[in-house]
Image (cartoon, rainbow, N blue to C red; front, side):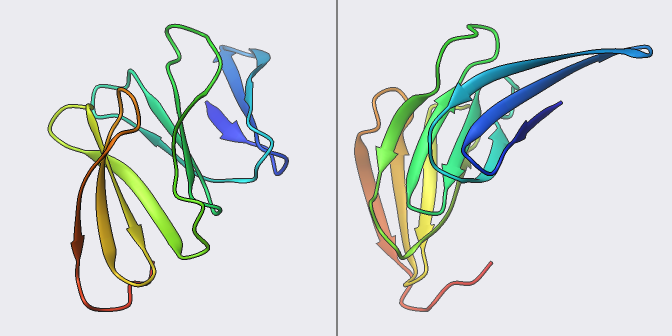
Length: 119
């Protein structure tokens, strides 16, 4: 079970039978608004309200890697673009949909929907 604390800490609860173990996986120092697993469950996106997206790979047990930083107060949400887990899509409140590479955070494309978006 993965969850985030208000301070931007990603925590893992390993539960087996009546025993559990707590592990702090990453500290990104920003409140996390969303945790999203890739379709194959190899990567976890950590999304903040400030427009920063981090990638965490549970198998590697390393630190969270900053993929993109839109630095936009208009940032609304992000998710994996399927099939696969090579790309991320984000959307702003103003209706701009953006596609990013998860390998290095490169901005690839955008589409303006022309309408305001709400979750």
